[in-house]
Length: 259
Image (cartoon, rainbow, N blue to C red; front, side, top):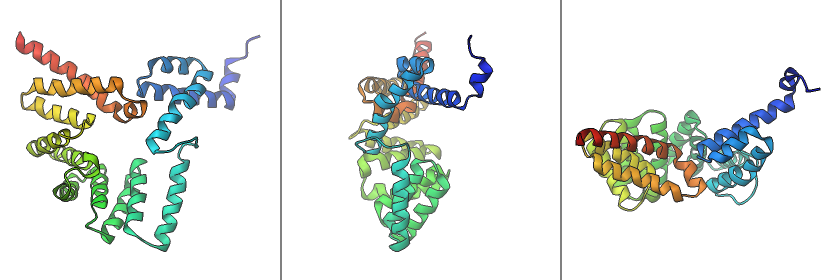
């Protein structure tokens, strides 16, 4: 006799397996691993295989690691180390490193507190200024973020491989300062090929009537994504999705104009 569905639902082990399958299914969809997404949803064994063959290797690469670890374990250990160092040494870079972890975890209040402490102790360090600027952006304080990020940009326009200048462009966009945003994003793309910079620059081009140039950048994002490793796909998934949508809109606008 088949087991009662209510007994299955009430079984905590079954519930855990279902939650795990759903987690792996959503992650596969986010990475655009469509076959994995289907199999993860249908089969518990597929979700387990996906965890070890796709999810964990990608997470390890993103975190710069080399082996298996429980999710969040490295961050928790690093937080404990930094808290001890702050207690005994109280150095600016320790506060900043702790703020970076909290910012990655999207704990914005904690990140802000750490970067404010770091800034008070060393207001000239470019890494601290850059991290503080990103934290201020996450805290919706764009004007103050621009102030910090501009200081970095003036001294090193390619700081952190151009990501700080890209953050400055994002901050300008949030304040509707389009000319400045266009200038710095174009500068970033002279040396790098970030999906975020291309999509945000395409937005500016569309607003200024340069749909063809916008479409070129958006198509590059789509082409790059086809050959990108899984960790890069995961990092840029939102920008790739946005590029696809904007490229479709650009083509519709072009067709309407031609008509």
